[in-house]
Image 1: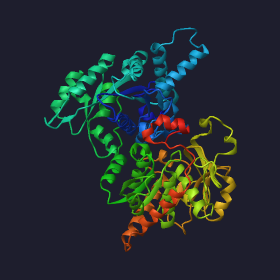
Image 2: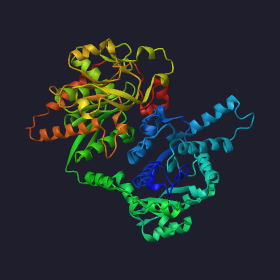
Image 3: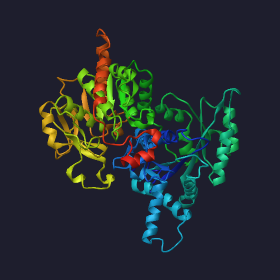
Image 4: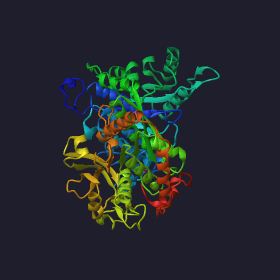
Length: 603
């Protein structure tokens, strides 16, 4: 797209424009969604875009942070463990991000300190300005130079006024001096709260936030105002007056029920026209092509049916811990014109009758990725119910290891089969480290990250789903199926339908159609590559099977409470199993103490 002749007259090579998005008043306003939506509009006009995020925390990356602290860890093609906003960037623009797309304060300081230790600064006093800010600016320029795109959109994490984000704000304040003010744009996202007892939207927080940004030396070129309802013209003019902006530069970003409608709201507000024509002075004749995007939002709002998916995990109190999984389910639901309702099931609570009912009444059961032994036996019970009762099952990463362990115990007769991550003394280590990994002391050195080729075997369900002999999918795990026990599992019906090209690593397992309508699990994470217009094949078919299961069950005569009884029995068996030889990671104990105890990455 970078060499598209249709835009050669307006944007020349090496003339990348830069958009910086900041936030004020409070956190969690949706800077990532705003950045991704602007990216979607520019892509819809035939322009090329890359997005990146600067996070002000000291962690080098979010790989070891608790999901309760940070949400999910999104993995890029090149194996970077990054912020969940990069998932929004990819889903909205359909462009892969990379290691350069997520920069933390810890990563920046780490780079500068290593240079100082090597003597690169020749004895100079190393300071925040210019050394830290220069490194930040270098990361922005690097994105433009490496990808040769028309626009780089950079989201600054945190809130204006935070101490942690000051070096990043200072760096972007300096950036127009280096590349030219006409190549840069500052967009500020704020909150216009509704005060119920007064019956009014209040602009004062936005005024203060803009003033704080100006105090740092940044004058916003556009203010995007989050609010419950559409801003009136009077409120727009008032904000514009205090921000020294034209009224059309004040955008009403009101609440919508579906995040995929935000680009359409921005289009109606004229955001892309203002950015391209009014600010950058570009004559981009092509109007945004959003018909497919409009179709997705229309189908999502007009879904004719719904299904219930039980998602079994240990971080279910925070939905963002499984954000990409949730979005992939939504994409698949739109594909099948149905709404996917998620029943969040705590894997430690499967002895509870309510959790038992959730599984027995589910149209599908999904076990996502994770690390550590807490809740593992509950996941085993859930997989057993899915297999024995013919409920569609999808396992991802740890969910595949759960499925293999459950199958080994209850079908292959390997009593006590387990992963050595959960029980180092298990008599049947069906999941284990590879021999060459066991000598590596640094746990990070054994992690498998990023996209790897997966060979799909003939005459299997997954080969039919993907319709490709080799696919590339993203990984984030350490343990693998033990090849010493693999043949015994295959002999009693476990199908290893996807492997590494040398067939040494098991990538996908499934059960035959004759024995189960849909029981598939992958070691890789298909959710990271799912898109609204192009659902991940495993999610697409899982939701399709769950829909068929739901419709078939509607015509059956309901029996008493046998399904719930089965769940209770499976949960009781799980409770009798020996506890995993891994310290528990309670949220109450604090993520740092838990990570020190286990030295495992959080997911």
